[in-house]
Structure formats: structure tokens, C-alpha cells
Length: 481
Ligand code: SF4
Image 1 (spheres, rainbow, N blue to C red):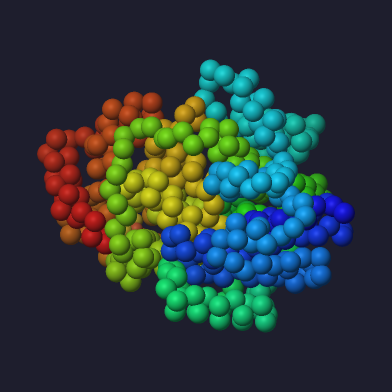
Image 2: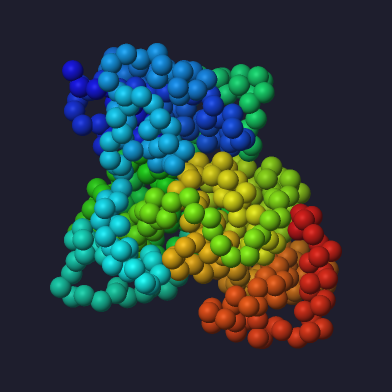
């Protein structure tokens, strides 16, 4: 008899099983939800996905509900195996369980050995996503064309343009009803959540995720590039797929998704200019972050130690306390739906924290707990390395620091905000502009290698103006803007 395959809560798609009658173990361990307050909708999605998978597998699967993973494993007899967990804590635990076989990782296109070989070739140089992406395209034969060259860039669409068709709504079922009841009971028993409960907005099964992917490829992929870098108060989704939680729960396998997007281009259903950035996100960024997490190991990030704690209004998603229109809208989206696309994450949330020296590891933990797709391996490099400007060993990171005018250029937030994006001083000063200048003044030595920010510093570095901005930001402190 084949060993029982333990499917972790982020290994729930068919590509985590090999044959159609292998017995399966699923574990719902409360310790996962007790450690730090998780967004209520994230907890719902995890439990719903686990229970839907158990229902799909029927008699083949046992679903154990215990306090800890070890309690569940102690109940089993016979051989058990698990695919390589997706966090260092999970891997350490799996390796500590006597007799538990740990299989190679799944759910990623590039193998760890291939990445290590690529990284070793660059022994002296920094590791850059763009170089890795080129390697991955060649290695997997994706987007190969005899014409060569980059696709023509198309003009970005305005954030206020006609909305694209949204994905079909998800219909909650009896499993979701039971999950909601259980979470209410847990909350009454003292398990703390952040954010608001609401209808399930993200797929909990492979079938739901596939249906959303098919809809995205047909309706939003053709416009993907034109909305990739804008934000709108009227349309939080724009042309994004919002499938990151489906990939990170293992419901979708990225390799066929990459092929399906490529096929849309080859069939003439989407221009290459739109398909390429989507594939870059999946085959480039997503894989690069996953590989860095394991390749670099738990080494601490360098750079200046930003140590300010997250203020309570931010940690608790208190959007109503905030007047800055962009931050209030994005924080409300996280509170009410546990998701925003990557631009508000970097330029509204991460940028605000970077400007105020908030502790990067605390911020990464907040992102991991507050977003339905939050994982250790994504947040490690994106939050600590990229959005927060802490040096990761050997990785070429750039700070995502921008001011209010930059936010105004790519969004419709500033019209109707009580602040003025160009102003750094005074009652109407935009907190992002004052914060941006404070960041420049405080980090002047580090900006030498960054021509954009060095030029911004030179343009604004008048001593009198500098003292006034620093004094104003000091006074603003950690109060909600
Ligand atoms: Fe955000 Fe500043 Fe624009 Fe207001 S003015 S929406 S705070 S960037």
C-alpha cells in the first residue's frame, strides 16, 4: 500500500497527488490560527479549502481536527509522506517527525537545483529578477519567438477607464456555513482575528480557481499591461487576476497557467504586450521570491535597523481613523477583503511604512497575517528586501519610495483628498510627500547608487526646508494621517 500523503493547507490542488487511490491526510490544527491574529477571511479561506479538499477526496482522505499537527500525526499508524513544506518552520517540523518522508517541493516551475546552478554562475554579481526571468524563459521554452525583442509597450489606461468584467461571483456552500460557525465559536473562545468577516471572495477549490483563471484569460488578460501599474478608488481589481491565493494554496499549478497565457497570445486572443507581464509575474517574480527564500536561508537583512513598531491603527486595520484618501481606501480594502493588488501594497502600505522606519520584520508579519495570499516566502523578500530597503544578501533591491505626486500620477485618489499631493509642508501637506522627503534626508548616504532618489534629494535639499519637513514629520509621529 502506498504511504498516506499528508497535504498541507497550501498543497490542495491535484498536482500534489500522484495516483488516484493514494490515501490522504489533512490536518486542521488550531495552533495555526492561535499564534498571531490572522485576518478572519484568511482563516475562513484556509479552513474552507481544507474541508472542500477533504470532501472532494471522500473516503480516501482523513481530516483530523486537533490542537497541534503533532497530536494529529501521533494518531496515525503506517507510513506517511509530505511534499516539501513552503516555510522553514514547516520544513523543520516535518523533518523532526520520526518516519515522515519529505518529498521534493511542488507547485513551482523552476527546481531548487536549477536555481542554485543559475545563482552560482553569478557568484560575484547581485541576483536580479530580470536575469532569472530571462533564464527561466529560455529554460522552459516560454514566449520563444523568431522575431525576438521586447513587445511594444502600450499606453497605460487611466485608472478611471471603463471597468473590465469582474470575475464570476463565488457561491458559498454548506462547508462555508460550517466554517463561519466554527470561527465564530473560536472567536468566542478567545482566538483573536483581525479584519471583518464577509462573503468568501477567493477560490477554495481547484475547480473554482480554474474557472476564475479561464475567465481572467478571456476577459482581463488582454488588458493586463494597461492597468498593471495604476490604482483606482472605483475599481480595486482593474485587470488583475486576483489568483495569488489560489497559487499559494496550491489550488492552481503555475506551469499550465503560464502555458495557457502563452497560448492566449499565440491564438491571437491577447497581445504579447499584455501576456508578457503576467507571465513575468508568475514565472519570474513568484518563482524568484520562492527560490530566494530557500537559497538565502534565514540570514538577517542588513541595512539601517528600522525598529519603529507598527501603530495600532495600522496593525488593527482601522481605516476609519485615516483621512488620507489613498491609505484609508487601501486599508479599508484589507480590512474588508484581505486583499489588494501589488501596487497599493508597495506604494501605499509599504511606502508609508518605509518612510516612517517601521520595523520590516513586523511589517512582513502583518502582511502575512492580513492578506489571503500572505506567506513567509513572499513577504521575506518583497517586504523586507524591496518595499523596506533592507539589504538582502546578494539581492539587487531598490526602495519603493515615492511621494504624493507619484501616487497622483498613477491613481484617482488625490482628487477629493483633504491633502495636496505636491505639498510637503503645512496643514494640507500630503503625508506621503513629507514622508518621502524625510526618507531622503535620513538616508542620504545610501542613495548614492540610486540615480532617481539621489536626484530627488538634490532637488529638495534646502537646509531651511529640510529642517521644517523633519520637524513637521516628527510632530506627526505615529498618528493616523
Ligand atoms: Fe494620498 Fe497624498 Fe494623494 Fe491624499 S494627496 S490621496 S494622502 S497621495
